[in-house]
Length: 330
Picture 1 (cartoon, rainbow, N blue to C red):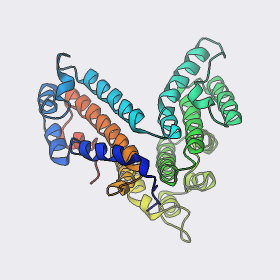
Picture 2: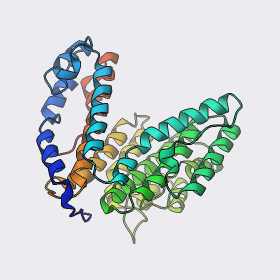
Picture 3: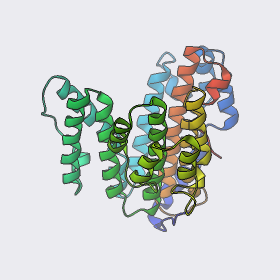
Picture 4: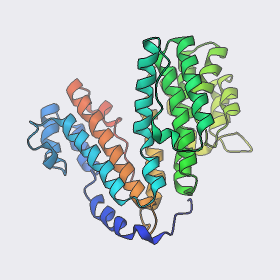
């Protein structure tokens, strides 16, 4: 467990967080969503939760209600976050999305003039930003694939986030775990696509998120190995491997998805649940910014679950497949 902050100034915020935690959807309620027959029944179940008030007057518009809930969650964090760096940190995802859209729009029109959001420039990461923008332009020019722009900007956002959060051991640890999870999934995806060794290595370098425990070198080496050796390298802690035994089940689900041509949904869920378990270290914390951050991210995860569940109901997905979409930890 990482060391948590002992800053008492968040005492009132933590009181509000503890009161609101009871409104988070539990596993029993998620099962009701999973077994809802269709979108209409999903709306009925949602109407029995704290989201009911957001459904009023919007003609049961689930998407708009969830968007409003996301806005409320961000407003709550901003109201109670007493450190500027914390507000800055959680402004980065929206800034990242805007930058991706602006770069793609400009490059698709044959232009190279776009502005970088100030949330990303308001740090000492100027050289990283300039390099990332240049990399995005080059990647798009070389491959013509918008996904390359996403990878480059995601890497930049991770670098800036690590710099902004450097005073918080908890948040740096969370970002490190996120990097490992995403980097492992990238490695498994590249194995599944079966591209040439040079192409796979190039894409892994482009997508690699810094700050995790796994090095780029160990991931590149793993791409050259058969599955047993890859898992040995990345799913065992030193001295037997270069990864961590905590990644074992996550990677195994990736191997199954590739070998048996299954969906990567279960692997993605396990990755999200690993992040949730990390956050739950703060369950009994009475000081510091960590419980506020945890509640914000738990709510964000809940909104993602609900969006996925609603889409599954509209698509007529079976209950067993739908359940795999729900990331939940307790």
